[in-house]
Length: 352
Ligand code: DNO
Ligand code: MN
Image (cartoon, rainbow, N blue to C red; front, side, top):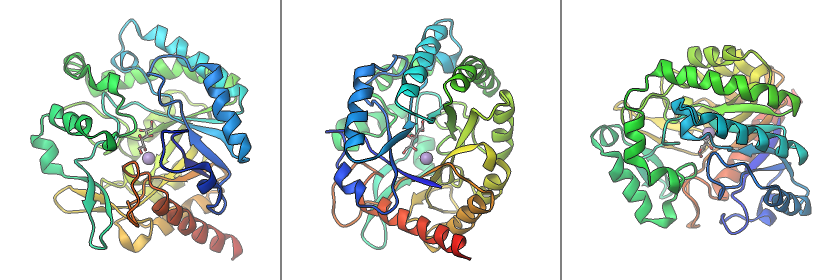
């Protein structure tokens, strides 16, 4: 496995490249141009500026997370073709700096959803938390205004331009069914995958987080059967997965090691983290350690190892520990600890 670490870019992250370089075994950064709105093509000079910084530290730029998909594509509107053309242009530009994997998602309106960015755990650390009952009763506007009112809480994927059009977007999705979403995803893939192939870049879709509908919006990348269906929409090695253990594992019915075993040849990018599930449907993010959460991280890493996985891995989110201020889920320390846990399991398997 090739270990990589998400970095939000100069002036946009509390973690520095100097620090990342000191985490054992990290070969590259997972990056994006976070200031380019979904649907626009990425300016080459901005791409090259990130490359210049990464080169100074010997980091690869192989994995981009994310090139976001414009809502018109997910909605299947006529205007989608323009945004798909821009997406193709971005793929070709990213190939020029050696990108091998593009992570993206197909969740309507919202990316990952939580109700509390700093839930206190027993050990005094804080972590991202999802409260089922709260989401059920919540007006999505409430969640958005909570996020907007606290600039420290900006969540990646919740781009301001998306949130400012919230009412309009909800209206647009009113009659969009899961089957419509599947059709719109297929249309997108049929256009994009040949371009990805020509540029030797794997398109790796991230599952829905959490893996069930929120605020009445359809969600389709939720479990093993649906991921199987997804891979057949366009049956190419370039139509691949970002298998996120923590997203899928929030649903107790999802057997993550079994998914790794089934899909390993089509997983381009692994997100590995643990979650603790509660009987009422709530869940909280925990350390990577198997005993700390509901997921058997050792079994997950073993499934990758035994499947001969050679793709990219990143510790996904981490708790906020040692009193360091950071982006929710994206501090330095717990993700670095996670990496050491993952290497510990991997190296042990390798040395047997
Ligand atoms: C959160 C991330 C997601 C992910 C996107 C992929 O930390 O896992 O925001 O980047 O869903 O497009
Ligand atoms: Mn993830």
